[in-house]
Image (tube, rainbow, N blue to C red):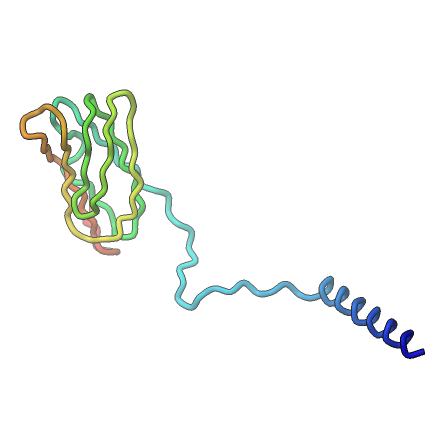
Length: 140
């Protein structure tokens, strides 16, 4: 008799657990206090061209801090583009445009230089990335 009581108790517990799992409300989504729940803005695409030892496209590329940007560069020679301050490099390829995606998380002015081609000393500037704190980007 005792075995039958235990069996009924176990079966009842399993049935209740199954019903609880089936009918329980979904768990609420947990979001940290102060967390940014906005969707990320699409990356800004900034296009440059390196031709005959000169970096063309814009003297300064202006973005707001926190922006994601995609730097797209065409080149007529193999060389290396270096973004100072972020210590990021991009291997330029004359066969196809190349890209670098970057989160502009530091404010300031950062020089873009090309290294390692046959024009003179191998260091060619001509453009800079200007990252402004949120809300202070100059009108364009």
